[in-house]
Image 1: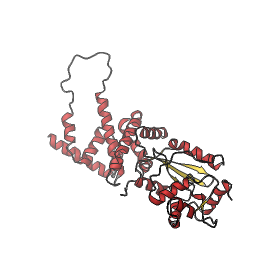
Image 2: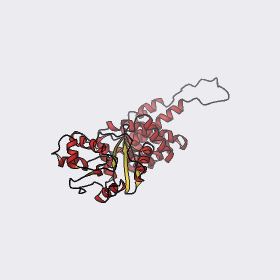
Image 3: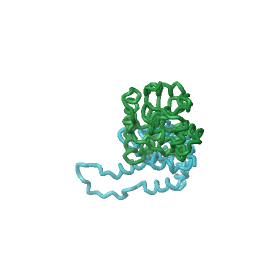
Image 4: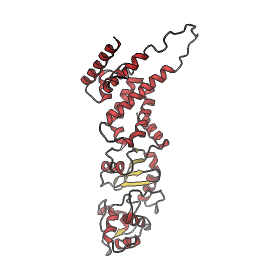
Amino acid sequence: MRATLRGLTDRAAAEGLLDVAYTSMDSPFGTLLLAATERGLVRLGLPSQDAESLLEDLAARVSPRVLEAPARLEETRRELDRYFEGRLRAFELPLDWQLTDGFRGRVQRAIARIPYGQTRSYTEMAGEAGNERAVRAAGTACGTNPIPIVVPCHRVLRSGGGLGGYGGGLAMKEALLSLEGRR
Amino acid sequence: MVSELPPFQVLLDEHAADVMAVLRGAVGRVDADDCFQETFISALRAYPKLGGASNLRAWLMTIAHRKAVDHHRAKGRRPVPVAEVSEVTLSDPEPEGELWALVGTLPPKQRAAVELRYACDLPHAEIAAALGCSPEAARRNLHEGVKRLRRELA
C-alpha cells in the first residue's frame, strides 16, 4: 500500500496535479511542517502551530490539491538541517510569496534580506517597507510571516533591544538568535 | 472565496484503504493497484471543481466503481490467446447488451448497487461501503433494482 501511495504522489506530480506538497521534519525545537508549491516553499509551520488547521488553510488559500510528498521537500529539509547545525548561513531554496501581499508582503520580503547573525528593529523594517511610522503593522507582518526561520523574522527586535514577540515562543526566538551568535 | 474542501491528503488518509478493499474485490489484487491510481488521479483532477465537501467518500467510491467497470470492459475487449481459431461465428457477440442498457436506466443508487454486485462481483458489505450506506440499504437497493429489471424484461 505504501508503494502504491508513493506511486500515486509521483504520478500526481508528473501530471501537474500536486499543487501543494508537504512534509514534516524534526528540528531542535520540535516538528516543523513544510509546504511547497511548484514555485517554492510557501509555508513553514512552527511546532507551536496546529498542523491540521495549517493544511486546511493552505487548501482554502492555495489549492485543495494538498498531498504529503516528502521527496518534493528533500532539498528544503537539507538546508534547514544544515541551518540548525550552524553550517548554513543563507538559504538558497526558492520561495513562493503568494500568501502575503501589500505592506505586510513588503515587510516580509525586507525581512528575508536581513543577513545571518544581524538584527533589525520593527521601526527599521517599517521604514524599509516604505512607511517607518507603521511600526505596529511591521510587527503584524512579522507575526503573520508564512515562512518563519527561512524568512528570519526572529532577527527583528524592539528598538531598545527587547525581544518583541515570536510565533514559536520567545524561547525559540532567543535560541535562534543564539544559534546565529547574537545572544 | 473560501473553499470548504479539506486537503486532498485527508481523503487519502481516510478512504484509501476502503477504496483499495473495494477495488480488490472488484478487479482482483493484481489489477487493483492500477485502478486505485486511476481512481485517485481522476479524483485529484476534478477535486478543485467540486462544489462542496458533502459526502466525499461516496464521490470517491463512485469514481472507483466507474474505474472497475472500465477495467472490466477493457478486459472484455482484450483478445484472449487461443491455440486454434474457431470457424464458428458467434450469433450474438454481446448477449447482455440489452440488459446492461436497462441497468443504465435505473435510479442511481439501484444502478450502482446492481453494477457493483453483478459487474464487480462485490458482496453486500462492500457495496454498502462503496455507496456509503448500511448493508441493509445496499441490499434493498439491489433488490429493488433487480425487481425493476425483471419487470422491464418480462
